[in-house]
Length: 206
Image (cartoon, rainbow, N blue to C red; front, side, top):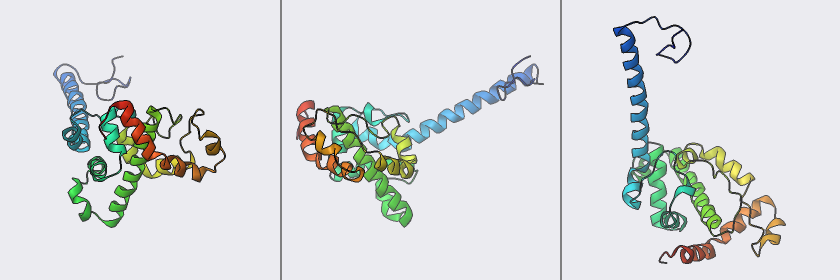
């Protein structure tokens, strides 16, 4: 029995000859439309980033895929990293460029702010992982797009499961004695020192 060209099932396709060719053309258009939508989404999500960082991104790009210089820019607090995150978040959510932030409804503004704080944390955790300070990271297997789209639930899960300090870090014993809520606070307090170590390791100008 021939495979149905419209849905890929084993149900018989009743089209023959020219009509069967038309079925194939329809499937081709569907696939191309999906590809077009994916490219359009990537352009909205990463168009400004590709101009900013001069490298290519895709819908599957993760923090672990970023080069050291890009990650350092995102991990360092300040206007540059904030604007970059707003570009990504508002692009993924199809809310326009960062300049449109103040025109968003209050609830949407809060979502963008929360997503920014969440992604900033994750970029810093990835930086600390690269210098050997952190072991297991929350959400490390998810793409940047997935992180933005699922931020509320992922952020709550991340709070319940903070990153793990490596056993060879001098403060490991103190970290292990902390309650869950204090662990992320402690990790964040390592940021300034971690940035210095990361820049030296990666030969990035301060």
